[in-house]
Length: 90
Image (cartoon, rainbow, N blue to C red; front, top):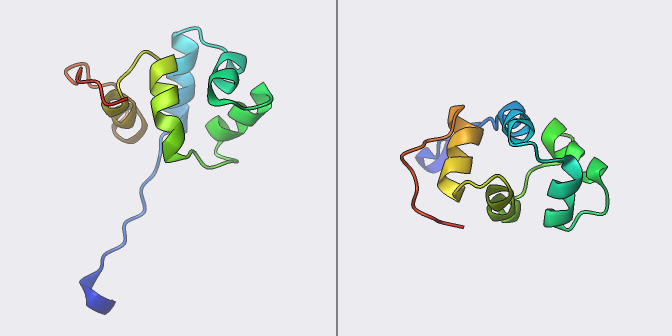
């Protein structure tokens, strides 16, 4: 490896996102509208992994789910919402 760089593949838990959205009773239409997507299918493709989740969408998704960005990141990468993280980063 050149320059000692280490590349790590990070997995996003999109199932956790889908489950949390469903638990909050938020529709794909509501998520799509908030994100400026034309159809709920556009959002469904993000949750399914067909379309990559963009960093610019994180604050919008967090707001819709009534989470901070920190809590959303914890949900996506650490399989749960960190209830102690209440500092707003959105």
